Length: 89
Image (cartoon, rainbow, N blue to C red; front, side, top):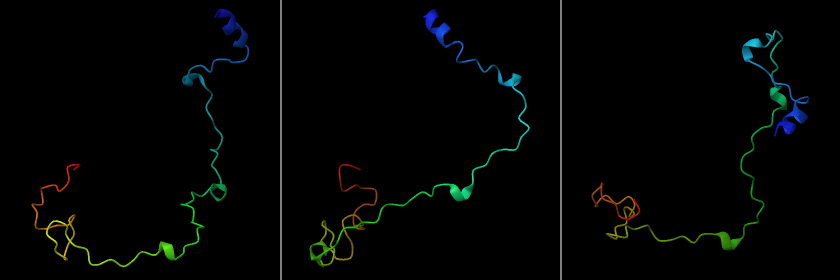
């Protein structure tokens, strides 16, 4: 192992403690904001839509529990607001 350290001793000199470094008296380098890459949004779909993609108009949404038109099962006001309708919650 010592022979491996001797091989690389010339190539890599230790940096030393930060207190021993010379003070940097030059100005700070700042990137040019005009050259920075802009984060892109999601790519636009190039797919050609046809009549298969059209959604058929469905009847009014109804609550599956009480069959009322005014709300759905998720927004059912008849149930206890603290009760859960599914076992996953």
